[in-house]
Image (tube, rainbow, N blue to C red; front, side, top):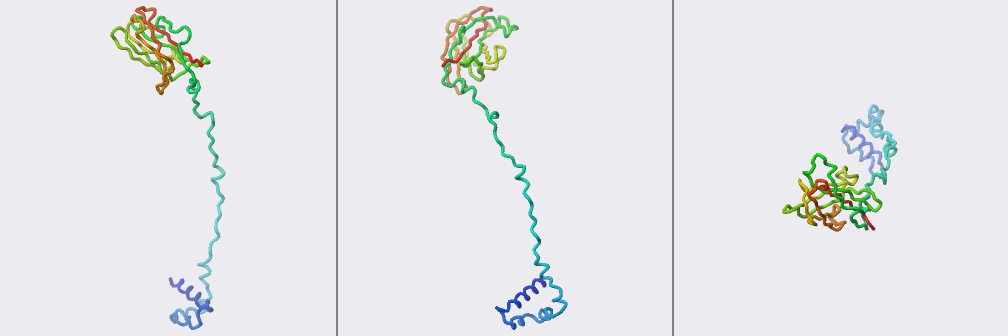
Length: 212
């Protein structure tokens, strides 16, 4: 604090345009004597304390390593399924339905009845992630089954399978099969099916294909 007072006193005394010489004499005598002393004036400490150190300039380093992230088109999920079924309707593929022995589950033998197949686009490419729904009755037993295409590769890349019962049962147009997308939109009209009490016909193969 004493050093700061001295600097203030010297500043006021040098500002002679504002204050008269008697103005400095109003300060305490001890301070005036200190100013007159050769020892006090010989070491101008005020200059050392008021010296401003040079500013250190640092070159930016982050800009050299920042690289803009570009999202590649190959990383963007492509709505292939949507494009495949857009403005398309589906119908039974030629030859469907086919009644045959259950080749995918030979261990079940005659104790099994089911429906399976695939769904194809207009270029005969198998389509996954579509819903096949089977509804109706076998005798007095209600049937409600669904399967996702592509979930049963034993029937092909777009394969699906719906288990209908534990025994082959004969029925006439008591079951219907239909095709939906994952949003619940009907893609193919319901088709009525027959079933047979025949161990050689306990698998019903039903394929759908897109038509424009």
